[in-house]
Image 1 (spheres, helix red, strand yellow):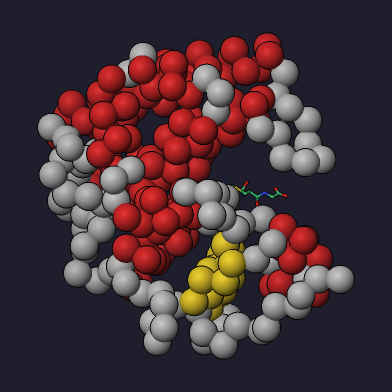
Image 2 (image 1 turned 45 degrees about the vertical axis):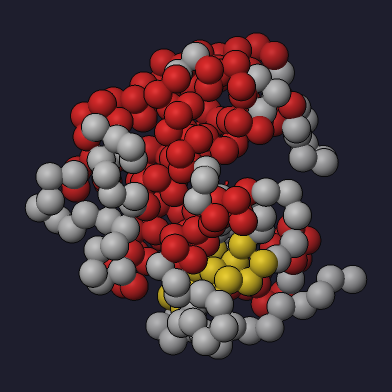
Length: 227
Ligand SMILES: N[C@@H](CCC(=O)N[C@@H](CS)C(=O)NCC(=O)O)C(=O)O
């Protein structure tokens, strides 16, 4: 038996701890939009609810997270990169967490926002799953692990290093913490939890220090610490 979800009456992000929905959840929490009386609800669900709940599977037939539903507009959104862009455009109208079009960091912002879910995630998750495959899934074979580690060293870490060099840090776009730090933080958190994570991060001191810095944020700790 699963506990049925209630049909949302306000904009709702469906979320499971440590899943990709952590990224839009972090952005919404960072903007202070959630919590009692806030305009957006974060509904924390189980994998079984995601896959079997009759209301949710009708709204979200992909059965993947993140999923955002705004009943006031009948808006249903998947894909964390596009979702974060939409949430920022709609709810962060004073550009607290993103550069507006025309700002010098704008192009790099868009690149890094989509680099996370489109590239870094698909390299990092198989590395993590070699060590911690979820129940019912196969662990990543060693040959694939080695290929993904190579890609991480040659593609993922250098992408962050380049941004830190170009904009001077301490954050990816310089001295302002933005939504791309949330996205990169997710993919770096994934790597840090893998058995080989320490060794991989130690090979990139700049990225390692960056992760140490962003992981001091109370929201990072709230989202990524075991309960
Ligand atoms: N590119 C997608 C990835 C979505 C994705 O793979 N989500 C995982 C959780 S992190 C999921 O829902 N897995 C369940 C499944 O595929 O059955 C995004 O960033 O939104």
